[in-house]
Image 1 (cartoon, rainbow, N blue to C red):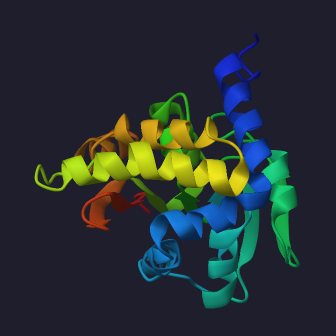
Image 2: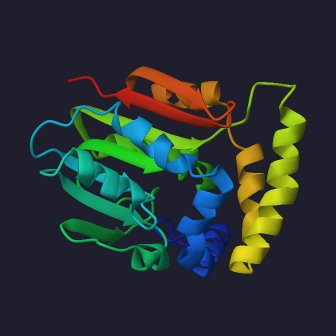
Image 3: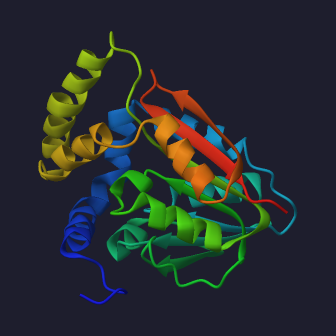
Length: 232
């Protein structure tokens, strides 16, 4: 494997997302009880959108965040990038949104291209959070914003058993019934439970060169929105 080639693990993740692409949005709505729409809109409210802003939606999937950007900033120039081409192909209404099949750890964009980089449910699936953050920061313009929406480990010890039951029992069953892909919906809860705490991701964002790093937890502490800014 050369430095620019994805690993076997990365290829397995890509194949998994390809298999579930057609039912991905439906499963997200069901698993989150429709709250994923609220989470994305909550993230949009944290972004400063100057006129004609250039936005990279990294790990864009079927385009939910890209469409939210278009809703709040009609003049934005949006690039939706995803490692899994099948996810981009499963999305709808890509008019005026540029799509790009790209690896988050090896972005094909020049330095300082984007004013805003956003990602939703991406970073817990990458092999190296540090390398992914480095690439996100590399393509940001000075003064640019980075926002990350993802799952996180809950702090509440009282709720933890109920959350584990939901993730480990209910989600795989639901995934099997809706998509026929039990393996994928076993992997996704596992990736959530083994991912960084919100404070740990914030520390890594600061180490990548971002300033004013903050986060907000939602959904009983199981989801976090992180944000940071590059110095001007």
